Amino acid sequence: MWFRYSASHVRDPLKEAEEDLELFRKRMLSPPMEGAAGPTGTWRIMKPVIHEDKCVKCGMCWLYCPENVVSWEPGRVPSIDMTYCKGCGVCASVCPRKAIEMVVEEV
Amino acid sequence: MSVSLPQLVKSPRKGVMPGNPACMGCPHTIGLKIVGRVLGDRAVLVVPAGCTSIIVGYGGKESLDMSFVHVPFASAAAVAAGLAAAFERKGLSDRIVIAWMGDGGGADIGFATLSGAAIRNDNIIAIVSDNEAYMNTGIQASSTTPWKARTTTSPVIGKTEEKKDLATIMLMHKVPYVATASVGYPLDFAAKLKRAAEIKGFRFIHLHSPCPTGWRFDASKTVEMAKLAVETGAWILWEYNRGRFEISPPSKPFADPSKRKPLKDYIMAQGRFSHLKDEDIEFIARKIEENWRIVRMLEKIFSS
Image 1 (cartoon, rainbow over the protein chains, first blue to last red):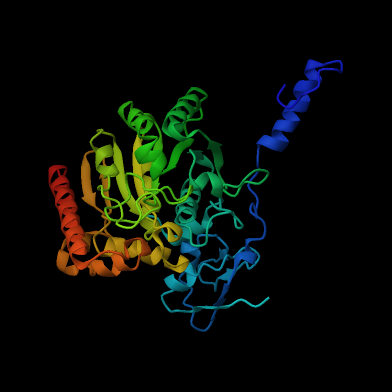
Image 2: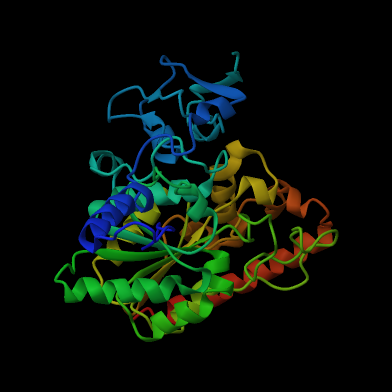
């Protein structure tokens, strides 16, 4: 069928169909997972730092984060997942109190 | 009906997974996040070639938290119409099929199928995430690229043709729901999406998505630029819902030209417009005023 190239062996259509379904699940269907492009935190040049004393817990950084790495609940200070944060700085630019500062990333 | 932040937080679906291949400061992922948060399990995305077909991941792992179908370029709305019909036949009519396209897939290459689906009033939501060029293949000009914008196929003096007003064209297809939205106003977009989800038939949302890579501005300014487009009047947020047309609340104050921010702030912040002279900006301002005139007239016509 799809992935078969040799016709030399004896064919069992039922078994082949099962195998193909397995292969289809494995190769053609992709489940939602973190890190589809690897640890994208390595792209980062500038790193966001949250100043908790200035934060008013409005959730704007959570709403606008293109990468969805900011985790926040109403009434809490947000936190940022640094494994995947690309350091674009959108959170710092939308923060109404300028509580997020972009600093140079040091490795 | 409006959407609040806590409602979006409580949603079971994340919309976009961290660690996706999108550029830094990508506007599409902001839009897709809202789609996933608002529609959750009910959403089925049909996506033609474009940035989003890259953002979803290149195999093995999917970076969107929704069902996703890759389709050839011109066929997104047609495939979505077929899926919607199949869902209806199978008794899964709570599923919402979304044809999520870029401006290439919506306004240029896929326009025939989009128009066809609109005329047949197929039960789908078509969202065109408009970043005003073919960003995925290297910033070639599309029919929604604005006048004078520099791209790789319109270098030096910029594009000589006008921007296509896709949302008004779709409105004239006499479909039940047409709206424009912006990634700068996600709650407005979420509310529009929620209203659209309750209607049966063809629904169209034109989402304005400033692209840092193609428009040549800093990645941190994506949202700032989207907001500036609305605040200078260059992008007008409006909504047509079964016979009623109205300018959306974020855009309402800017119907009055004196309340708008200077257009130069928005134009000159983008590298693709850096060659523009003052008279060009004045010319663009006149065109914007013309767009406002059309929108105000439409509001008057559909006010009853």
